Length: 326
Image (cartoon, rainbow, N blue to C red; front, side, top):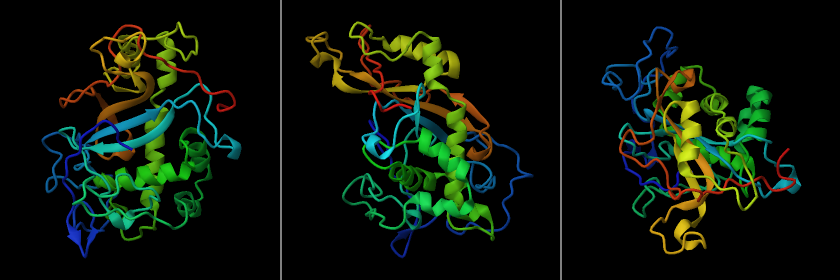
């Protein structure tokens, strides 16, 4: 889910009370994109009517590949554990080019059993997002035979205090439906139900595999530790990540605010103190599925680079809970 951000509402048209695709009336003719130029999203030429919206991302052109650092899953007793020495996938998100975003863009593709927020706008006047109560989204993609993809997702895309497939359904329903290149019409007249979901999950994995957050941090001397004397500065974390990514990603923290801790009492620094999340921003050439992407700084559209404490040595990067990582 998105956290610590405001939402801008720009939703597709309503048809009989159900959200339609991003571009109602889009033809389901062949969209192979083989002869389409890979126009860069958020550039002047990436506009509906100028390019095929299936072949150039024209809706959510600021793409975020997001990762978690959790220390447990809460479902270890059921075999849901964390992969050792690596961060995990949170999702692949489509922001507007100005840094705002929308969500649950096509309620005909709503498979989230725990929608958050529970309306399309996040406010009471939005269209309700009804909880899905059918088979898990993993069951919907099994007919495609992508056992390798499902196995990878189970290992590197685990949920927190919920079955992993619930997180996957949330990320798909809330975010994948807001990419123009994942509209169902883009798959042509031979579209198979849930083909776009398989495509979305495979695409999110491909971005994750090129973003070795744990390795970049470790190379910069930033490693998990439960030693109370080992704390890091935001500048150390940002420097290590920027050395690998070549731009500054968003660094997210949770836990107590620095000025509520013993060390920070009386300080004006109200940033959070436990390293939790990283968001990598991109503009993409052509379809997000191509994974041909240009790194963009997280503050390129005026947004923040972090919500973490800014005081030196204020951030804890905890080790995984014993028995939670395999």
